[in-house]
Length: 132
Image 1 (cartoon, rainbow, N blue to C red):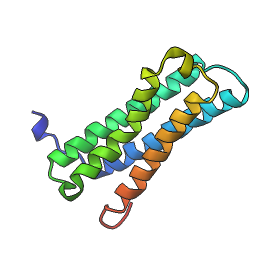
Image 2 (image 1 turned 90 degrees about the horizontal axis):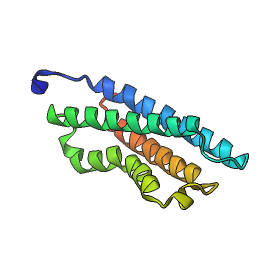
Image 3 (image 1 turned 90 degrees about the vertical axis):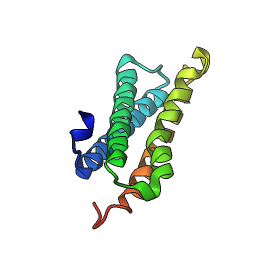
Image 4 (image 1 turned 30 degrees about the vertical axis):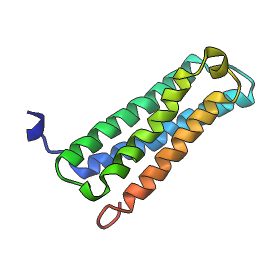
């Protein structure tokens, strides 16, 4: 059944923008809290979860597009670029609680995820025929 569903590449672009927005918002919120010397709040945690969900949706759509035969020449880089930002969040949750609660840990993680997502988005955009 899922093989019968056709996903437009534009959906991948739109979710890519959503990834950039959510990871940037997570970076802004966690950095603001760190500057104010406050712990990661529930709102900041929810923003980080939203960024992770956007990344997962983006990865799933990307996998479906690869299944449709789009982007096979850049197959490996698609997986690295699409799943790389999630790696930073995985590492964050694997850290001991004391390390996660340090002032600049969350901004470092969210900043790394944002920069990696931005890199993947700009590299991926260069492969879109006619540009974005």
